[in-house]
Amino acid sequence: MTAVRPDIAPKQAPEATKFPTGFVWGAATAAYQVEGAAAEDGRTPSIWDTFSRTPGKVRNGDTGDIAADHYHLYRDDVALMKRLGLKAYRFSISWSRVQPTGRGPAVQRGLDFYRKLVDELLEAGITPVATLYHWDLPQELEDAGGWPQRVTADRFTDYAAIMAGALGDRVGTWTTFNEPWCSAFLGYGSGVHAPGRTEPASALRAAHHLNLAHGRAIEVLRGQLPAAVQTSVTLNLHQVRPLTASAADADAARRIDAVGNRIFTGPMLRGEYPEDLIADTRHLVDWSRLVQDGDLAAISRPVDLLGVNYYTPTLVSTPAEGSGDTRNDGHGASDYSPWPGSEHVAFHLAEGKERTAMNWSIDPNGLYSLLMDVTRDHPGLPLMVTENGAAFDDYVSPEGRVEDPERIAYLHGHLDAVQRAVADGADVRGYFLWSLMDNFEWAYGYSKRFGAVYVDYASQRRIPKASAHWYADVIRRHGLPPTGPA
Ligand code: IFM
Image (tube, rainbow, N blue to C red; front, side, top):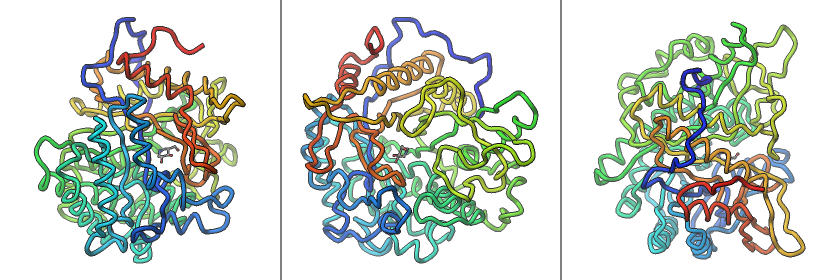
């Protein structure tokens, strides 16, 4: 999404503004980041198991083998969520735990884990929100070509049917994919994520097949599940801003918006790939062959909700010849660009803004603008903030507490932005803090802590940080406390 129009720029919300009735307060995790039990009960390696075991790919050689051991500790974790007053828990399903080779019959023990988790949540009064795919493709499917191959979308459709059959009677909100941009462009473009391939054309092909898999899965879910069940997809829409008012920088923003956002929202929400995207990338893929008859109709099956993940804005320019940093886009350093066809765009960090431990600048207005932009571009589409949060260098004090005022300030600012967007007409149905607890932060391993709950990985002890208590208070009052953090 490019920057918000001046006529819908942020306004100060009136003091009395509240979150809508029924607004959902949640927290999120993802299977590979928290579960551990990587080789238990029939689970086979996913691309992230392979990638994390490849020397040099993940900081400190960390893997998700044990992670936060949520697989064994899920009951305690649900009890903790209940104590914090969470109303919803967004988790993802490990495909290789339930269908180890990515094809054929499901493994009952794998399905049982998710049934038990969901039952525990329901018993605690917490709404389960299930994501089918959060980046962990079964390795066998990658060995057969992975997302650049169309057949992977067929496999995903079968997997979606298995999960709808297994959990459809107890999960009311389903998400097909989490951040397919990362799967396609970090996985097959810059290679900083699994499977670590650096092939621009494959990244674009992967994006199309992820879109296709999404649409087909929506069709399966709709066909198998009761009408009241909500279907969705979660996108990490880049809030793209040009560095200057120059035409060259506006073009840089347009390009990144095309390959970062509209490559998904175009086919999913409008039933077409943007013409400028096709023009920018036609030297890499033949779109008329890649997109087959019926694909766009399948991809644009309506969703009930759009999940939006937001952390920081994306500031871009077209650098003068030979200048500018075309690699520091905040997604991890690589000699290969995750922006096929627009490799020459440079990325910048806003001056004068505070940063998180990821070196991402803190800008709540970016979330406001994003929600308003999506509302403008897709009127009537219900939205859910499915991820928002920040990593900081948290530590346990000698008294056993974790004080994280920066995270409280971050959350306060971003929830205020959500509230302002709601007041200005965005139909935002809920907010999921990323993350419930510290976890495996992909190529950064365990070096970055995003949790509201601190995890002592040596003992697997959970310690709710000050921000968890603060968030519990927000949930209790169904609104922000009258004053910000000290
Ligand atoms: O940890 C990730 C998550 O898996 C996807 N969205 C961004 C988070 C923070 O980088």
